[in-house]
Image 1 (cartoon, rainbow, N blue to C red):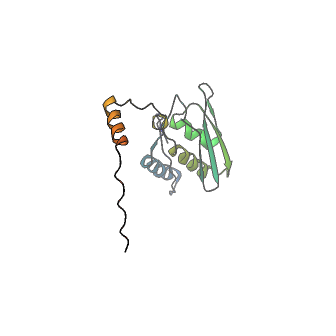
Image 2 (image 1 turned 45 degrees about the horizontal axis):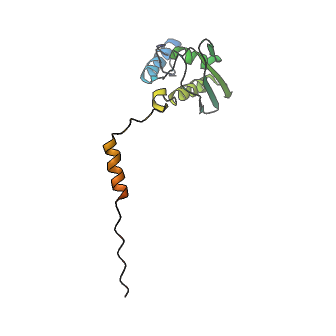
Length: 148
């Protein structure tokens, strides 16, 4: 389940009948919501994850590409609010493991503002001069050991 605003969760449960199982799974999914970082409607970088036999690769896509994903991966990305992405499901096609692998891949995403490098602020000239004076100061020679 997801809110299409960059939050998604997944849960599975058993019950006496279908409605009981769906209710329990929904409650589990609500407890395990994660926030997915996005960048211009897509993910910030490539990511892969493996759960059991399912291996998922998700790549960012340019605007207008849409979701190129199959089955479970498409559903998870849609409810997460991602509109442009490419994906490939490798290995097992078990729907439960594929869904959990997709969630694991989305958890590995790092927001763009955390990994984009920025120029460092210029230091004041006085600080640079102090460092230069300390570096130029002569060091005291080490004392020689007395021979016995």
